[in-house]
Image (cartoon, rainbow, N blue to C red; front, side, top):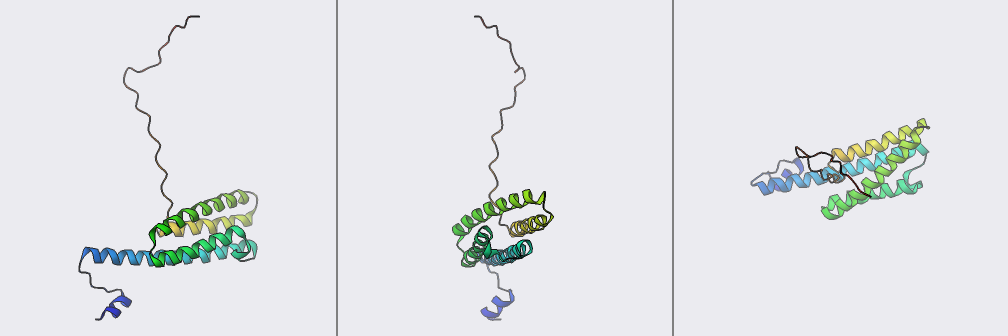
Length: 157
């Protein structure tokens, strides 16, 4: 089997850990790029379903669609720092839209459909590992020691 046929069938010969990891990273990037494309079309469907107009007609949705397209290009190019910055921006915009449509959905049944679409976009991105960084845990208070308790002090004055 020549290199080209191995590449197209996914049956590459694995001769080292490095080769296997490099192949895994390449396939993961390709899957993420496809996920970004899927999310972009899901966003387009949400825009058309909610407003009857494409995402390009709405400033926020247009920016999100353009961000997803940039992500696809970044992921296909393998530029990790740029992809991470993109993910942070997309995640912030997505969470803002989810919050906005969640608020609108309290009174508008049609807004709930848009909210579900945005939640679906987020879920697809999460399934492909595109999650925002986890918040830093809060520092814990030191545990009370036995014998520690409130004491009364007489104040003169």
